[in-house]
Image (tube, rainbow, N blue to C red):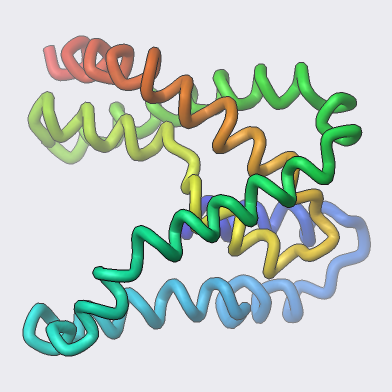
Length: 180
């Protein structure tokens, strides 16, 4: 959610003349944020017993719905190929450097919190990972004029494979280095 909020602030807050009250209302009461917070609150309040009755719907169907959602995101990105050609170099550079910078911040924060080397690795990896599913959808809802092909391509085609192949081993070495 912090990444989604930052994206909305960057999209709305840097656009010149900003109505700050409207911006904060959109940040904290926008549909995507309310749905994320509401889902977290319902799951936490309901606990394992309260969510048992909805288990087949939300957990059983999740993989199939996720596959359809990702297919739709891929189709949206494919329709924007000319735009991607314009921004391709920037997307690759950003999709690699931003996770590295975020991993360093996550690792230092994890170390300051006193986490183990494994905990530092996990928090660095989480900090380096774009929210591959939630963030593009939330930004698409909150900032409809944004080009979804750019965010989807950066997260799914650049950052995700980078993190899987190169990033996670680097983040483990970083965790070992900061843990001493």
